[in-house]
Length: 137
Image 1 (tube, rainbow, N blue to C red):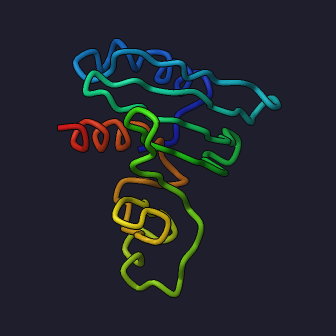
Image 2 (cartoon, helix red, strand yellow):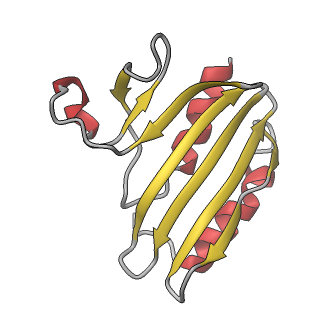
């Protein structure tokens, strides 16, 4: 699948509450232009199951990739999971999705697990929505 154009990605982001109406209660995601071909996506997605997904992406539409991201999952005031691409080559358990991984309890800061479905070369939001729905059930 080709990386979406800026317009396609913007439509995707703003359509999430309608496209995932059974899962998503509300979204505050916004796409902000940094330049003609680079944008920042920021905001939160609120799920019917009580979880909240915080999103920050820097998207380069010329290079057709996500340059940087940070995703956090919250239950109330407790961060219960986060995803990041900080490389940890010393951990062979993360090789299958290197450098993408997630942190979760117990010992959330040091408990790193592979994050299948995350990429710099494709949108990650559908994977994250699926994860949040499964995590909240």
